[in-house]
Length: 509
Image 1 (cartoon, rainbow, N blue to C red):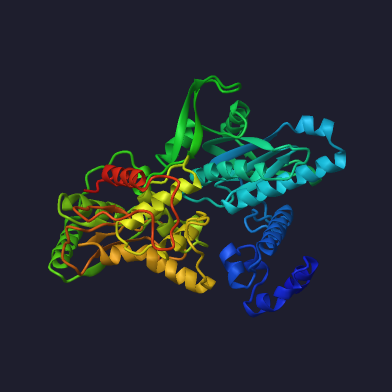
Image 2: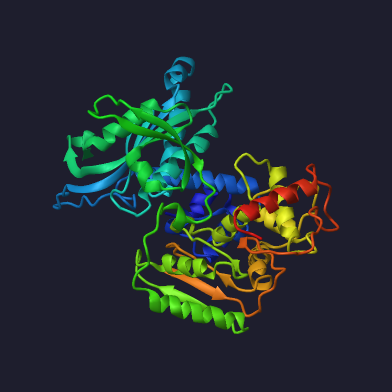
């Protein structure tokens, strides 16, 4: 693919040199983020939007061409595909009201809308690690776990379903029409890989009860909702908030099926705890726990250290870190927990962003103004001057500051550096000691690690922290910000009480 010609076709030839100097090729193009585009000098929002739409079209086009799709099963000449038995999460997506659209719109207009809908579905599903198996008119069938299986297939399917509801609603449908979808998801054993049909009708079949169940669940879903089977719910733990729809008879299924509606991603602070309802005793790790305890005692004496726990997935790294935290009990300490994700590898500050959101006690129903008030309140616990910290971190969390704070004139690189410092400063300067559990398989981090760090400072009773901290009698500060701050629409004292109540519920004293 000629990147220069592609940019010229979009009317963005001014960026040719930047793309060439930064070695942007077709493989890298589909992975570009908004941050990457800003680094390339694409500062205009309209130009970034044009590029993202064009990149999405390229992804959809490459998906329709089996030879170019990165996860298409191997169908090389002379090599017959082998059917295999495996666990699969199946998603059915249905566009609501397409029949009414066909009666109201010209066929060519309807074709454009359905095409945009299919492209958006392909973009969201493939970005989440799924495989679009078939377009069924206004429906989409997708697999998570084939041809490539991942540990988080069920989770990613649900996240993709929630993302599809938002993404499809933003499509331009004309005539003041908002497109809506419903999603059904089920997980179970299938046999996948047999080729059925001939010519253009040839397809990779999935045989088993799971696809039928997913299709039936989609039919039960209300507009703009995701309905999942109990088999999927058991794999998700506390990662999402659910509404129990009860046990329902499903046509074609000879037994009642328990059905759940996914409300939204939960605000749980720990993936480790969310995926483990009950813990078994930790056996055979006395030596490792003793080592960490000795390092902790040295840290309290002023000799700080960092301990890196390395091991295969599932061996118990996070359990060791959790056991140490439990043993600390009532000792004054600061706990910072950052969880990486293999699905946020293009966001280097993703762990810090989630930590800040949890520390401030953000709720789904919070308005942008309320979120800003909460951010100010939690930052005021540890900062005298907020005129720079608040707009910097508000931008990181995508919270508009309006006219309450003056904008910061930083370059993109300086803004990233300052944001990194701002999110880390609390753990470095305000704690007696810190324990961190970075669990995940983020490609930007070394895999299969859990780290425990001890501060080189003696315990301070006035420690305040953005995470799960223990805090005593720290003087209260105004929550409204620095000299450039404008008044808030919500009383600062009320916000402080809410934030402190949130921190208290999480163990802050």
